[in-house]
Image (cartoon, rainbow, N blue to C red; front, side):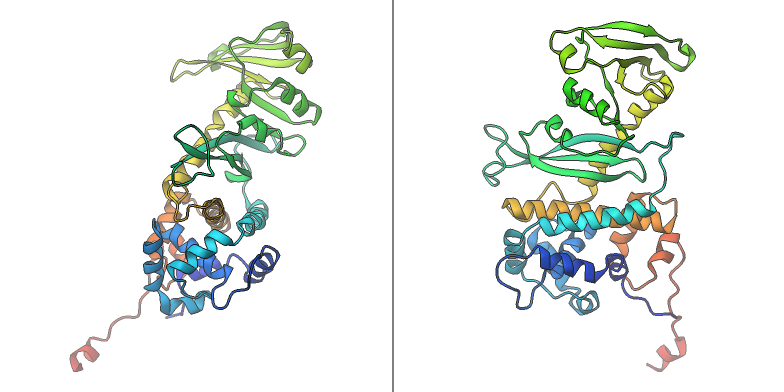
Length: 383
């Protein structure tokens, strides 16, 4: 029988150790470590994310049960005080930089999106992570409530988060949206929370297309009407100009207004875009695909630990979130590299159940049986 390291060890090998140590040196502050290290912190926190551990005691006790395997992971056992101290004091910027490294690797192997057009496609949205204000006083949101906000620009090539920003809960979605540098020619699907006519003009000037929903009280005049296929749920396809006193100044460029009725729910939508080349039905489908970013938030909140935190400082919270995002990219890279049709959920469950099993990782993902060495019954008889 061939020898294999643990599944966890094989997963961590997807992240070159020398790259991690180089980043750790760049983002180090304070005194040097005696026995602990940032790698040990990452291994411990990654194990917690992949195995669903929810408390500091639970994490340390679980990793203590695998002490004999830590050597092969290049890690050491961290006590509760050590792990807590590193999370509180050592800058989370290391894992933000690590996220960027893993992102580039995912971009190199990610599949294309499901539309025929070649433009890069993104869905932009934000999700609030609630915090207890008395425990996290730095996360001031409302009078009796704390929160931070996770802003994500989801690339539809593989559905991974390409643009990530974490802000205070009070920060408005569109404020962050204006700071993102989408590639020229890309299409960005956004909801009405990003309504900003001046930003629409800026995106148009940069050669970036957007698809959003038109506000019901928007004032405009119709310049041109085009025929639509009503059997596909389309009701109108128009070129419009805004006539409001302020909106006409902020966005003087002509835009495209598309009416669509969903055949399943019967709900009517009115879309606004600066793309005049794609068909009206494709524009409607692009906005419908924006739901993928909502599914991303749902998945990461249900499967990784970004709602309950083992530290109370801002640095500890940010460290936990950025490590969770790094784990998401590791699983995504594994999915892209294996070229299997298993979902992210299925891969995570396999890792959760077999994290410290000594078997081939790719064979595990392919569903091949675990070939264990047969037991010699005659040897057992002698015993």
